[in-house]
Amino acid sequence: MKYTNIAVIYGSDSSEWEVSCRSGEFTASRIDDSKYSIYEIFARFGQWHLVSFRKKGAMRIKFPEEARPEINKNDFSVNIYGEIIKFDFAFIMQHGTPGENGLLQGYLEMLNVPFSSCRSFVAAVTFDKYSCKSYLRDVDFVKLAPDMLVRKGSDLEAFTEQVNKKIGWPVFVKPTSGGSSFGVTKVHSSAKMLQALNCAFIEGDAVIAEKAIEGREFTCAAYKDAQGVKPLPVIEIVTKNEYFDYDAKYNGNSEEICPAQIDEELANHIKDVTCKIYSHMGCSGVVRADYILGKDGLYFLEVNTIPGMTNASLVPKMVRAAGLDMTDFLTGIIESA
Image (cartoon, helix red, strand yellow):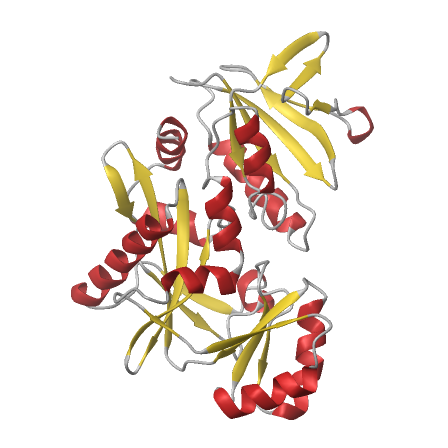
């Protein structure tokens, strides 16, 4: 094995911090402890503490919250009962800032510590929905819905008029950064636009209004191992709500059909597009892309460079559907970094 001490970093400074904890705990529990020692780090608003550790071949030891050792960010190490443990690999499971927008990646790059996700520049670009779409505007393998960007402090009434004129209704109003559908609203007329914009601005300073494309929703992930970029099975998402919002994602108001019951040609097309996006953006680790299949083709929605990794999340479902063992899958991600 290339690495010995694996730090799984979860928690975040965003609204997704609780989801991040669940993803991190699941990931840590599935990393092969016959090959690595695993250390769980809860990091939020600059405070990094060791939650638990599991040395290779030993039991997991969890610290009481008031007695969690503090991580030394000068060299990415921790003192456990007088023993200094220096982490030589980071498995990033922070949804939102700072783990998904490039800040954490930049810190690790400066310390020359390998990690599981995209490098800092790629993470920064992909985390911002408008920037990510801008990188894909000239490609010929996927469509992009019309959209418009607005920043906090702009004339929102004038922006609404421009949306009405240039895009039309309905639109999705969403913060350019963040996930789990926080701050997202489907707007059917200008009357509800101001409320939707203010809701989105709670999550960040920049917001996009994107034309709502009617169609079937799909998601697919790709990852890189020693053999190159590979896709996982496609999932179709059928929501009971108007769209795939937070309630549909986390409260059971959706059906996630894995693998999607579609013909082989369409499945291969979605997989191929996902791998092309992965390569075009310069991604690393496992990355999930979301789509809408409209009447005139496949539309890209967004990419998730730190996708959810709970037992019920989409990527673990894809891994199981592919007939892969989750522990072996994570080993591949670690060893290919």
